[in-house]
Length: 317
Image (cartoon, rainbow, N blue to C red; front, side, top):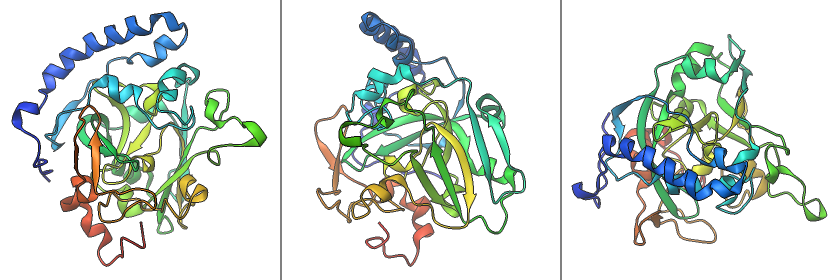
């Protein structure tokens, strides 16, 4: 399975893997020095411990990776706040160890996993994926994890398992964005819930993720465990997961509950289906001022289009 190279990227723009690993230590040091005066936030915002994984070239796009600084300082993670810098600024409030993930529902082998145990179940690999935000910006991120399908096979889902539901930690002490504000206002209904159809969850591209850029996941990027579904808009990739549940009915997801006319269950990247308030035809790669044409399914059409054969993608947005 080969992921096609984006047509507008020159070979001179591609960052060599070893080069960015060499840069990682430098960037960590620079970030630490820049953030040193901020007190307790420094350790959480700076990069995490090294996490070794061999790159899987079959799942590595040739686009130049977005810088570690941009990946860790420009985020949507409403559990910390609605501004792009809230996750990095408040990341120190999250305590990703110890951490457990309850896996249950329609499976023969339900279990509560410690995150360290879950991380060691299968060999870790690095995959370089495009990430496309529904807001019209994009990144390229070298993630570390293993196929979610490997875990699902181990759990032995029953015939009743049609969907997989992911739940993020609910703890306003660790996630300031979950606290009730003025007039009891909250940006979303907590806890954050996302979901995938079973065939989407077991697709080879869907990654259970524990790290990025050669390190364990920083808090602001969904530590200690998240999913990455690269052909969907970024909010479909649930972060800081505490429960994975196998269900028979389609889950009602957080953004569907909040604004059903704007955010559907599938939320596949589709340049032909605009958001009600802006176009999805182009996106701006973070670090690049020019806009580029958004690719169908974020450039993964050859791999995933068959999942939606016969579906009206404007209706099932």
